[in-house]
Length: 484
Image 1 (cartoon, rainbow, N blue to C red):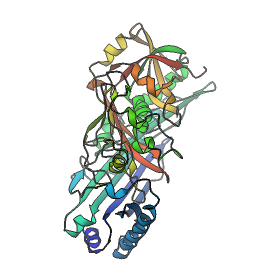
Image 2: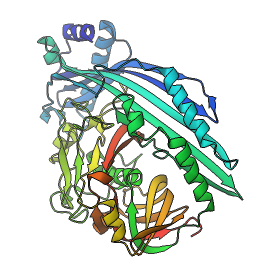
Image 3: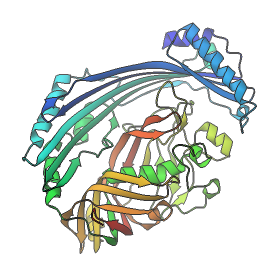
Image 4: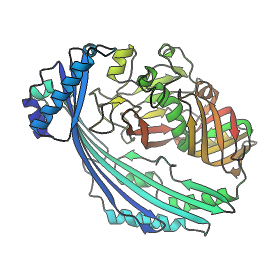
């Protein structure tokens, strides 16, 4: 990185603003399926993105050639696009004063991380795989651990020319998973650790495996998959709904995260990922949820999946409340979208790789804990259902009308958990669903989760997102079973 900084400093961009973002990512996935070790996969990806603002235009260009000639060519290409865009853009980019940051950020454990012992990890995966085969009705089972390390540099040319260090960030991600499928009498049921979105993703070291519950998960999810085979279908009707954190991850992501992304609100994503029912005039007055709903954007949480010190436009990370006591306060918009809209935002201009430009992406989007214990929430329900772990989802282009399905449900009758039910689903409208929030669990009900599979942008960007949420109780929700 020091060599690249010196090379960048020697160049002469001859533009109003020029920044360099270098990303090196190393990935590794270990997997066992049906007690057979699958091939180890590894990847290395390295390159740089140059961003230029000049004469009111905005341009960028990527290169994997981190030489003086490669960076100079990228600068010239970015400048060319800035000159083209300045006469065609709906916004004068010279109005934006992007920062010239300096500093360092490390994921927990990165600075002193021990060498990963792959044999031990494979032995753990094999043990969980073998433990899952508890019955002949178990027809598919497996366990995985994905490891990802990313090193990033962001520096402006003005900073580099003055010998400043820019921003260096080192990230280490751990993504465990277990999935077990049972089949009997024409019925198939799958139970997993964290769902199909690898929900127990965090930053840090191998301590994440224990914290995520990987140890012992094989036998547990197998028993629950068999339990679902014998379970009745979820009933249909209007009733209370208690969502556990593994499902709150998806509910929060789809019906709060994406609707509040400012570039989507401004119409940038309409062609591909859709628009939003949220409009700019709603901020400051719109009741998004009940007075119990408090939602934050917080990239500063140490071990959450999308924590960082600065976003990919160099804006320092801070915690901000997006929804306070149910009222919509702030969108998820980085520096460029903030300038375009005149609205306050957050540090969330993010790119999935060196060859993609930063766009507005939720990072760590969290629901602030309330004061209710899980037992208190269950006791308050006369007729309802507890649902856990997303298995299916559908939401319209404006991120408003939705329908979600879960792996597992448990009926709540007379304030007590009673019968396990399969194929539990519910539907609602984002604009009103959050107003039915009756209770918010305290910190003891909360889980720190995430997903590596959030897609958006043209060309597509698949990015890491963090979500922490307590259990939440909603009233009078449209619930239905798989046969409804």
